[in-house]
Image: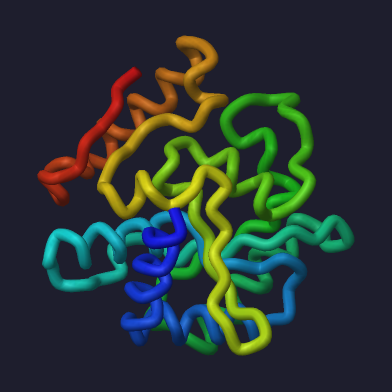
Length: 187
């Protein structure tokens, strides 16, 4: 895993847009703030597939602050749109995201816990700047991401309702059309 962590950090560092985004997120001074999910996953897969690097989807900014109301997300997102409108920002205080797929799910305890609940392993990735260094959040490691392998997290293997969400998401995203080398575990 250490080798794949280094490779992912190198890909992020080599991307001027991701580094700019990480600096902007750092300067927000939000608790446990990170760039997460698709921005990193897609950049890694584009790089490994020798494709042009473009930020395809939202720039997912996640943080964890129980003292902030949910409505703060929109205000932060608007501030980000005002200061860096070239990016499609999406801001989520993960304190309020535990019920996203299933009502009455246990509350998350941290941004890492929230990222660990993203549906598939290569999306369970976050990055942030700390003391001048680039840090990763990777609750399931980085091997699936770097090896272009997609599988549901353990929680989404537990029953058919969870697997259905995973499968529908994979079908909707059509990742194999974009990245033919991607291996998808459907079970």
